[in-house]
Length: 328
Image (cartoon, rainbow, N blue to C red; front, side, top):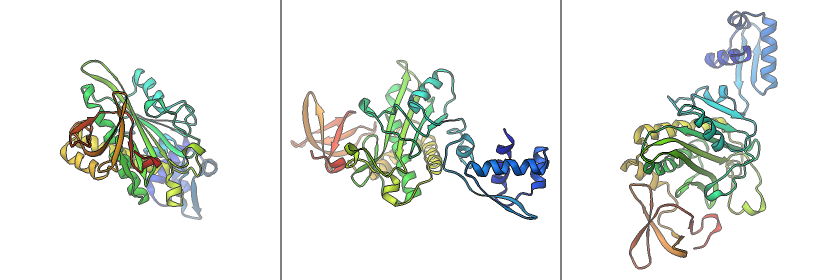
């Protein structure tokens, strides 16, 4: 740990003023050296107040990704204990898979200011410009049967939805199975990938992309996408949002492992905008129109067909009336 990092940690721990004398003793350097490191921290965006005969006090932190910023105050036992931060990368999911194959521990988090090859479901591109969003992936090593992994997307969706509501007050909802919406526009997408054998999952990667502070979108997305800043009228602290998502995700994993308990399903369904609405999907090369009726114990969408019968939708593209401007 560098001298700057040690100063920052001590200021965080204190919550108030720490004298230059104490910091110089802690580091074994002169008070002039402490002053220089404080100046460097200020240049990096940290708000550090100084007062004669009192010392230094941390008053604000920059909204940028670093292991120190993310782990400071992160109240989790496993998720986020190992953090990898990048200025730019092809995809946090791809990096998580590469590191997983190299032995990275479960609970590792990969976050980047920008993705040059971000992706969504069905091979779509996920627009991930620098400094505007929360683009991250979580590596899990659950050691369960592959059939249970579909629950990971639903667990992540509920965690993100709850965190957005908590920190912004916005009425975020879940569009089954992997989108978070505000009103009729998408603010977050989730992509879950895994490496597995027949009877055991080697690892799972949950990728999350949240549009946080962007103020514009490509023309093709303007009617379908929004950001937390556009909805609230003010910037959102991305590190705080990441911490809250990780806290909620770990809590849900502890309660449910990668199973879907009745209590979880009830909470998920209460926040699912899909239920009760007309939907359409492809089945056997034909377009089917139905009503979204329920979520199964396995996390699948149960739809009610016009003839009164029910059918289960496992995956694929489901259009919901009124969401993203879609008509079914």
